[in-house]
Image 1 (tube, one colour):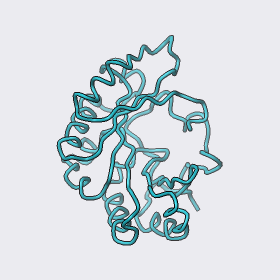
Image 2 (image 1 turned 60 degrees about the horizontal axis):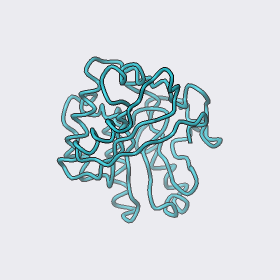
Image 3 (image 1 turned 90 degrees about the vertical axis):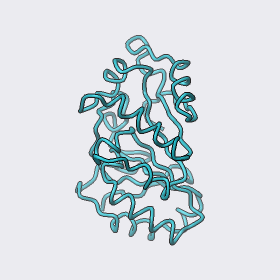
Image 4 (image 1 turned 30 degrees about the vertical axis):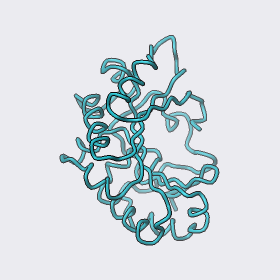
Length: 209
């Protein structure tokens, strides 16, 4: 069975899809198949909420010990927004003390063709959005999005999250081929703060964690 729920340290993670609107050059999935021994390539792409919930139930004690569960795997979780909602609703009901976070590339509104942020506000405690770059040109080279206007779509999504009062962090991956990609951390931090979000710099490591 696919690893829909896996663990890094004490934290539980949900890997609901391998589909993504980006093909980031630094993404660990292009380097290796697993994270801490958990193969995150799914057997099927049509994962249902019940499949994830079953794995959460089977590891309930360990999930609860970590205090937080994070949607983050080898794909963009908000592509599966309807299933994500059902999973969050289950957690809210059955594990109310468990914090919920979504790690996303910020394309959720574009993919779902509507503003999903008001619904997310009721379901998650925090959201982390991949800013990745200080401008569209570098973003396109690093993130290799599959649609035009992806950078602005991400910024607009982040703005909606902060406006709704969601605890929002915008992140970048630094020290990845620095001679090729001129990431300006100061400008990236300014973008995050101007959006109303926190800023996180994650240094790139080959293993991805």
